[in-house]
Length: 114
Image (cartoon, rainbow, N blue to C red; front, side, top):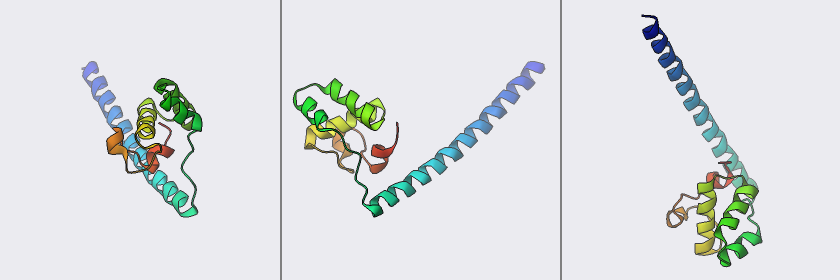
């Protein structure tokens, strides 16, 4: 009987934590959208990726280029790879061109830490 009560308690706590996390994620997305709108209105440029990244990609050193993008922009591995694919395809990263890169490149992707 005690084990069943304990299991029910654990499930309830898990559901509570999950709903709180969902609410926090929603607020964070709203704040990120607000920041993106402010950056666009103020004319703040996209985060720069060093010329070294372009040169490394041109030299076929993709792994080093991805590592630099991760370090400079603080992005996850997948996002860094997508940005490098865009550089290889077009020589620049532009929001909205992500389908060909294999990852949706948006202002939020470029500004989010992971």
